Image 1 (cartoon, rainbow over the protein chains, first blue to last red):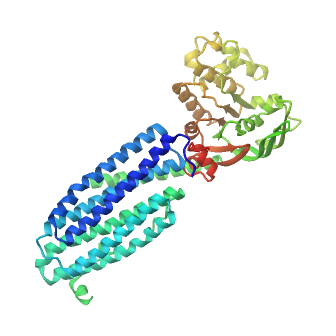
Image 2: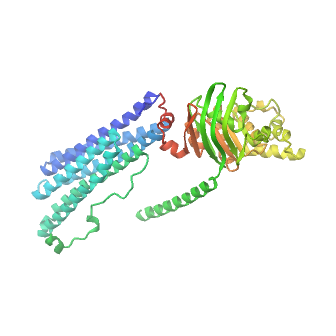
Image 3: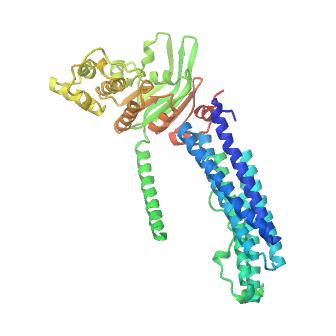
Length: 241
Length: 282
């Protein structure tokens, strides 16, 4: 694409892109470290992750302020307008991802003294790997304005949902085996849900990128595979699986 | 709080439905083209200024022509009331019809055509006569008034429609040139509408006006489109986006893209349109 005749405008738009890259990088790191803190039962790391969330929040505010200034001063239209709206939406999703990572870290802090069930941690590890991979991919799709790659991320979210479904069932079994596990399991369950939500935000970002590149919306009938909110699992069902 | 949100959402979807139905109705009413241009090419001597322009301009709406200087937008505008006839070396090919009537028909009186298709120029150009005479001139020479009192009525209603009446009603005998720039432009619009045209062509009508005078003219354009078809040439993207329902982008003598204004300014189909409107022209 040609550059703007007014170079300062071009630079302002590029700066927004680089702020998203920066914010995305932070969000990726926060997600990875929040799980590390949980897996290694490391309260110091968990505390650091909780504290670092403020940096993502600050970046979101910076982006919002810049967007408002550009709208007021430049009256962006067409692809520039779509970029501005995309950046605003994506920064909101990244900020939420930051919050979710912070929430995982908070739970990691609380349950650090407890022994964690190994199979659950392995499952969570898979989820985090997949969620991180999606996030990285969708950020690359934004940087390269690649709608096809964004659509791939959009479709891949069902894998994360499926992983979450199986962890959900495993944790229920674990709770039913011994009610003393319920406290720990609930924290792990919310942790898993948080990671699953990270995938949903990556999916939102993918939709935003599609709109940015194509100027039209992806159809909203994404295959949702997280069935936990529409399922009632009873003890006899769990024992049968 | 949850309940309040629910109510707001219901209200929202209701409003959206209402807006959709209004939009559909408006679209149906405007479906019919007021002006149809087919295969318009314009030559100034050897030089071709416009290449095979085809466009339909819907009635009771505003269409904006945008494009860089020398792209042919004003040339095309001047075809619509045959202003190019006044340039001896100009030659026009193709066909333009208004309400299905060919405007180049030999039977058609060009003076009458220009009474039906009014024009407002970039620089306000009132006659060096009184405010009253500026507006009365057109109806008088076209024999549109039946009596002195009828002429008074036409002048008053034209000035009222142009939003100028309250400002000038006590000074109708003062010279038109004594008014401010914005008032002069509204006087020119009053003069253009005094002959009851059904089309008004505006060639950068606000480029010499301050933002307040510009807003007044834009408000006027909005009101006039209830009964008129308006075509506006503008160099201001924001103005095109604000006032028009459809926008046509001209470049190097060709009509590159014509579509609903909201589409042109959010998701134009042609790369050249995108580059121009976003300020990326090399």
